[in-house]
Length: 289
Image 1 (tube, rainbow, N blue to C red):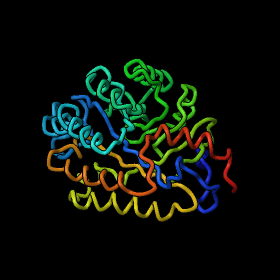
Image 2: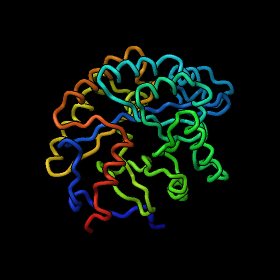
Image 3: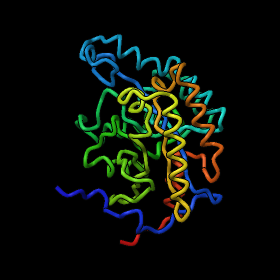
Image 4: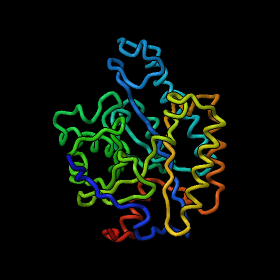
């Protein structure tokens, strides 16, 4: 089966991207704000208990995010003048309204991230109705209609981008294959860079890396993207989950990483919404083949 969603256009054969103010790297924090149901297995630290109902070990670890950790993450983002691009489960709107209130006060961008993180997009039966409910729930709670999408566990169906376009969304983050935005073969839809590698969930829980290693990865990423962006802008996404990076012993390393990026020359501290809007408005309709 051929991939008809997007074309192959190598980064060496594209028209230059120019970010506002002469910036060379557009940086955003993709903050996963999620709800997990208590009766289904999901992201786990210990697979030995993951299939149990209830599963206090793993559920409690995840539930630390909205109860405690996100407030710690907010402090670090505020300290460095960074607005989150929130990957928001619709179920969060009802269950954790204080988070919505705090995010609105900070001018956060709200992206649709499914109903909850226990339901993968590929498992949805009536996808159009499901997506409509997700988008409208987020719009009602936040006062903003989402403009972007990240599927739970980065899942889509072949119809997801076109259904999202019908609902007025303009970009997806699921295809983590580039350092620049690009147009999908779906009218009005972009792919905006996201990261599986520069992602606290993988760094700390899959690879067991240290806080110091996390900081060095962030530094190396922005330094290299800056060096490569002399002729054309790049995007740097930092993917965070409060129940991971918001642990007390890791918070200092998030602060160190954000301080380095915020103080780096040529970095535009922005949101994924603003990246998509700027690219849509300024980039040519088609890159040369």
